[in-house]
Length: 392
Image 1 (spheres, one colour):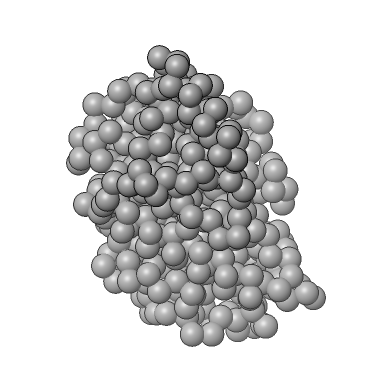
Image 2 (cartoon, rainbow, N blue to C red):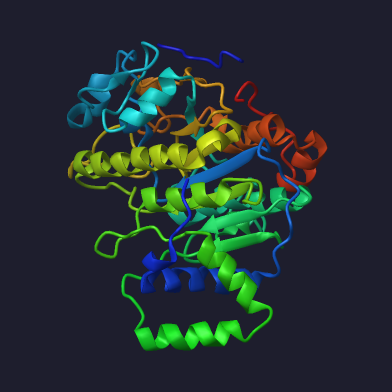
């Protein structure tokens, strides 16, 4: 049985191009900001570490993303879902061909796949698994706030940003977290724009904040009303960039629950993820060097295909770390193997790494939080989960 263990180790927006959609997008972001509270000035510098967490909701099939080409049981285990044309990584694992930019990052040692990971929850409910992953405890409902929110609170002056329709559980618990919602697909009328402009101009508190939101440029163009992962990550790049930007951000994406037609569905979704990584890299510019991106999902999927060309809910999955601050170019983690006797319950890849270990490793090594804060405040009651070393 194959084993692979941890080796240790920009332009301003012109006023003439301001559209009605952009106005409404900024208005949505402003409303959320004001609901949370006043913005706190950041003392960050251009070299300050940045962290982006990308949650792929629905349970992404890690074996499809990162096929273990060196496992002798791969062909039998995956059958019709065997990935053709996977790009070689380290000889034992390949990367789905739909992620050429991610593969280039790996070659530049800026991509780090982590094998067989999952939150401590070991059942198959999307809701409970995401709750556990976001609250940062060992059980669903273990906390009513999130580990990222608690992390932000532990870092004086740090600003957080969630790109989502509602504030995700992972970001709750912080008074310094804003939320930015995607633009609506339809434009407001010229009359409404004029009325709102006059209304905000008369309010001493709202006018500066609204003007700031308009200048931020969070105006990603949508395609036929769709707001995709790559659009959200482009917004994240604009908000994380520069001395006055956020330092911790969260992006979520749906559509990863592939019970049927997985091959075509994931080819499209992987393309969106790859485009998102490219856009983030290009948008951040020099700030990419101080960035860590964690791409995670709530659990894995069954090793074998079901009768509909898809997979069902499983346990062990895969995570990706990307960024200029990552010690990439390796595949790390403890590979449990695909032999029938090695599968959990005869159907699932075993999880050999608790996702909290991964999160802890980044908070300690990249953000520089004290271990005592990580162990007691951010991830309470988790001393038995040792941080994953050598990630950054």
